[in-house]
Image (tube, rainbow, N blue to C red; front, side):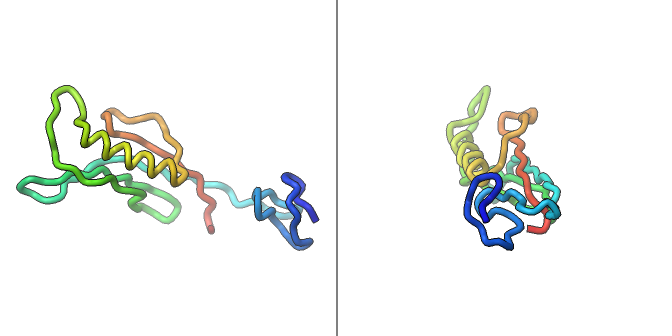
Length: 124
C-alpha cells in the first residue's frame, strides 16, 4: 500500500506512515499533541568571583527538566545593556534550543528572558 498523504510505500498492515506520520486507517486514533515550554534564566557558579550561565528550564508531560545550558562566562559590567560575553553565551543557548525543535514565544521583561514551546506526543 501507499501513504494517502505523501505516497510512500508502506507495508499493508501499517497504521501510520513512517515518513510523514499520517494515519493510514480511519479507525486509528492519533495521540493528542501536548506542549512543553521552557524559559531562559541564569545562575551563578562559585562565590568569590562567580561564573555566570544561562539555563533553559523546561516543563513537559514528564515534569521539569533542564533543556539546555549556555557556556559559562565571567561577569563584565557594561552600562546600559548586556556585555558581549553574556550576549554570545545567550545566542549559543538560543541556537541550541531552536536546533532541538523549540519554537520562540513572546519574550519576557528582561533582555535574556526568552520563552519557547515544543510539541510532544504523550507516550512517545
